[in-house]
Image 1 (cartoon, rainbow, N blue to C red):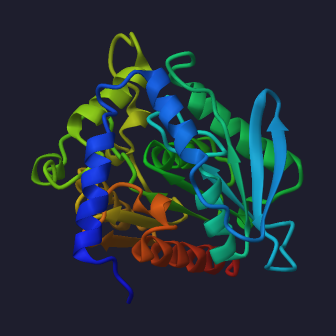
Image 2 (cartoon, rainbow, N blue to C red):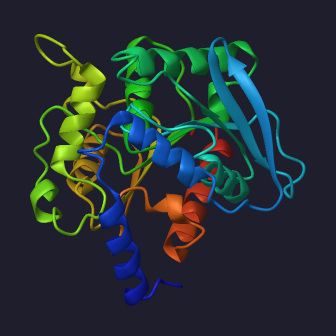
Image 3 (spheres, helix red, strand yellow):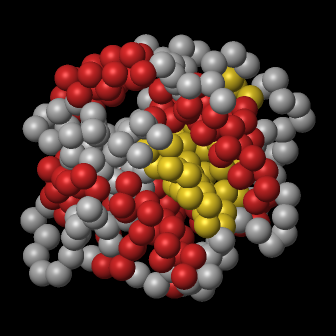
Length: 308
């Protein structure tokens, strides 16, 4: 398996550490930095982009034009990260295109309302709205897979739990990249053991995410923000990918353990020397491209089996 050299990894991590100041940056600066970064991603060949909308929410269909025919029935609904305060379809276009190419399935990204302008439960409501509208438009849950990274993975997981508790049909599976599985307690041991290794994440960053999304919330925190503490039975198949050097490692491991104990079919991949959402640097990292290939195979296996 091809790997990034240790010298290259150290250089990338050093750059990320010097430029990642999420815990202290203003919301506007974070959004500006992501917008600038989106313009620097190389365009993946044969990527087809179609703009769409869901009421007041905008979105993008991303597919690989080199893989024909592409089933119109099958879809990956992707929930972007960004700490609930940032993230756009444009920034996630490269990752979506690579997942579409690896899976042969079109990917839908959408821009849910962001904090601090729109706090909890705005993003959760928007996720449910888009899913339900897809069903109204003729897509079936058994032909759909959820995906998401960081808080987007959290949002995907929260959406699954909400749908299950409401007795609604669930998608065929979900892949979760570096999920925050407990934004309330933040008690995973890797917040300490990986603090010096993680170039982008920290306990302070996670504390900020909770504060940004809840704002001046009073009383007990919503239990949905701690899916790790909730009942996980009857969820669809899950693929969890996490880096060995990230502070969210414990969140991912504990989620996999608890889900398996609840009878859920879970695949957990811990990628050596990697950090949070390393898949977003697939144009640089062979490990990221390999991880996306695994996602593609997972999606295919979910959608080729009924039930998943």
